[in-house]
Amino acid sequence: MRIDGKVVIVTGASGGIGLATARLLGSRGAKVVLAARNEEALRAAEAEIPGSLAVRSDLREAGDIRALVERTVEHFGRIDCLVNNAGQDFNAPVEEIDPDDYRSILELNLIGALEAMRAVIPHMRRQGEGAIVNVSSGTTKMILTGSAGYSSSKAALNHLSLVAREELAPDGIAVSVIYPYITATDLERNAIGADEHSMAGPPPGIPPADPPEKVAEAILNLIESGEAELSLVPRRG
Ligand SMILES: NC(=O)c1ccc[n+]([C@@H]2O[C@H](COP(=O)([O-])OP(=O)(O)OC[C@H]3O[C@@H](n4cnc5c(N)ncnc54)[C@H](OP(=O)(O)O)[C@@H]3O)[C@@H](O)[C@H]2O)c1
Image (cartoon, rainbow, N blue to C red; front, top):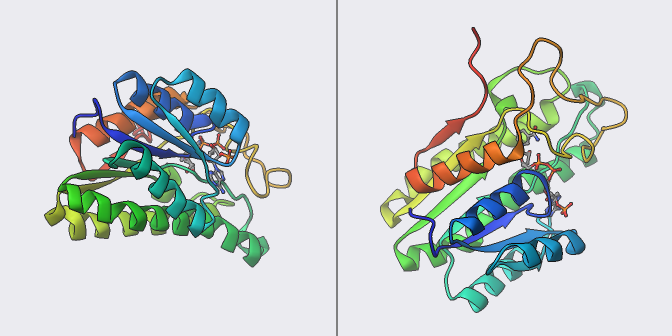
């Protein structure tokens, strides 16, 4: 899908990868809807990105997600693309995973992404075209101690995405998944378990973190190519 003139919802657009993506898509002529909870940051992004629209939304709340999509269609008349980027990290060994914390992570990283897909699909189907990019994680491609709560939420998102891709292809809707490598954002600071089990950046001997702008470029590539998957995890050797 060519991005110019398209209406794109970016969740988690108040900072990090989401804000970098919103900026890039806006600079390429997309009409970007900025969704997250931090209203002040959203208003600043709306003022900066021409033609954008800020809609405060908690992606753990199904009502907020439906209202986000309704507001988008009311304002722009259509919805071409969804970037399911809002997410939270969770650091704890399996034995110490608090089920309530885990439910909270699943509510955002998995159920929120599902609810957003369910809300946009009817509009895309009616239009005969659409693109959905789900932001997963490179941690789903490795066995990383302390990451099970987070990586399992994203691994479920991978499967949800790739099955949805098959189901929605006949409607002209391309569902894609991106696997970012460690990226220089506030993800670790915002993690559940950030204090006790923090993993501040790549360990020694591992390539340095990517800038969020690199992930934004990759998300744009996926929207435009409609390919199934794109990994930013550096190859070994
Ligand atoms: N950074 C990495 O190393 C890395 C690697 C692989 C994958 N990822 C994935 O990339 C995505 C973006 O993360 P990031 O690195 O940019 O982290 P970040 O800087 O912490 O940004 C997270 C974004 O998600 C939003 N968010 C969190 N909870 C939300 C909620 N309940 N409702 C709506 N929005 C919510 C935050 O906005 P508000 O707080 O304003 O709501 C913020 O805009 C996540 O899905 C993450 O899992 C990141």
